[in-house]
Image (cartoon, rainbow, N blue to C red):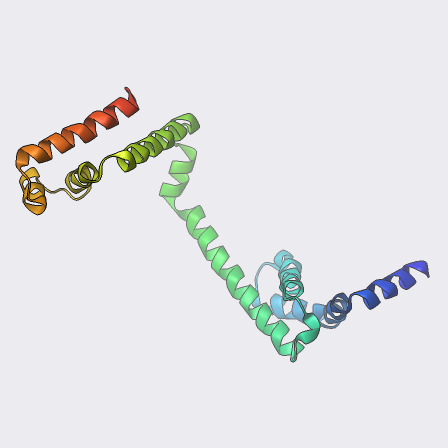
Length: 181
């Protein structure tokens, strides 16, 4: 008896929770039926129903929903669509031989990956710290693949000046990496 009184007191304090409880009592069984008809995996059905009510709870004001039945079943349809999309991705990942092979036989040790990330961060930091013209010359040569003569023509400087900018950039990168690969 005390539990019912406590529940009634809690529901009076929070009308949105009371409305959510009412919607759950009314639509739980119809939602089970909805999902059973549309999915082959029976154990997932209660989880799907739970997701619908979770989305309703996140709505903020379940009491403000004017057409609750339409809203709930549209939410259920969206939940089912999201579930099927997730399943497609999961199956594609599970069946992809490259993904399986790379996950099982990865040549990359965690330490090696972390070292590479640190090196990359260091390279980016050094490049950002270069003078603007030197950074531009390095970027155009390395990332854009322009020849020294093309860069020289673009900036209106001599080819020798481009070579000096490249030498400066490479010297700084070499010094920063200090023997790292």
